[in-house]
Image (cartoon, rainbow, N blue to C red; front, side):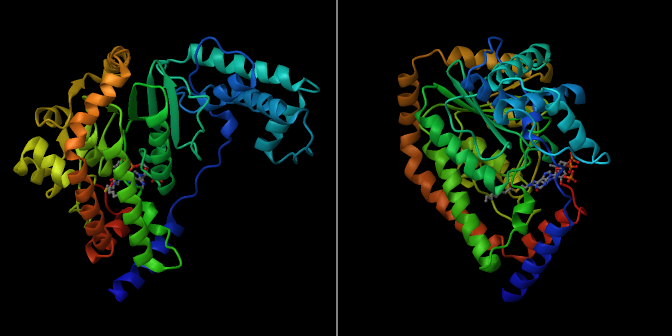
Length: 396
Ligand SMILES: CCCCC/C=C/C(=O)SCCNC(=O)CCNC(=O)[C@H](O)C(C)(C)COP(=O)(O)OP(=O)(O)OC[C@H]1O[C@@H](n2cnc3c(N)ncnc32)[C@H](O)[C@@H]1OP(=O)(O)O
């Protein structure tokens, strides 16, 4: 085991070094949809900033610079930093835009920022089924966006360029978001993804971040994280809905067995390639999947890694209903909006009546699956599969 562990530590670190650098972003330039009645209070401003994360249409550099300048003016006042050199094109363009606002008061800049985001959202082709939960503490990174409207709290995975793969930070942020959603005044909570994927499962680069305690420590903390993460889904007290906007892989599939409703676009697929990865099932799927679809269909998915289409997953009971991709968002949100008007306490209590019967069992299964995975992560089979992905040799 020590040999494998040493090799893992060495090679995982190499994997980390070979992964491409993240492209630098300006958070204030990220845009997204917004309700029509934007104003200029500090709260509206924060709302607008939070909402700039999901817009599908790029507004172009000129508008981005305008937003950047207004953001800086609203938060820091008139431009007060030295002008960048002529060859530093990007920073110079940003500086010029900010400096051009002269002594515009902070409050006016805030108003203008909010108005601009509002006008962009109006022209956005995105549907505005959600607005940010302004009172809620937003997660520590842009990779998760939490919004609340019409009695629905939505937790959106927002790493479309990485197919919404789950980083360690995202696991923590999802747990925090679920904790907040369990206490807010929404009736229903939704998990969904931004972009063409719902989620590609665990971010395999999580394995490259080896702590001083080595790979055993890494596996141990991974199992603790996994267990805590899945516990949050087991215990979540309100109706929990997965809006599966595209393909789903790994843990994003297994935890579907803990959701109350799963709506999927017909473009979605459901893939749990655990054997290919030298891993074993989690998310209580070793219990929920056989229960939902029968043991042999569950084995095809969890042991042999059979990928299901949305329609197959629906026929097997994992998915509640499949919608054509062209009308998916419209139909699903209309349906959820109607459900969210039902008496919330009745819905919560009914869910708990259903769930309580299973809770103890689910927690025990989660503990067992997590400790099995802890061992699997140290196996040669798993190490080689992860290395293979990191070196871009393998694709599922
Ligand atoms: C602590 C809790 C642990 C819980 C245990 C969980 C277990 C699991 O979830 S197991 C499943 C893990 N997931 C995978 O093995 C999927 C790996 N990804 C792929 O096979 C493919 O990326 C794909 C099939 C999901 C999509 O293929 P394709 O459409 O060709 O897109 P790209 O491969 O080019 O992906 C774009 C970009 O995103 C990166 N990426 C995608 N998925 C992951 C991932 N799971 N982990 C890390 N990175 C991922 C991919 O590497 C590309 O990055 P760049 O090359 O830098 O653009």
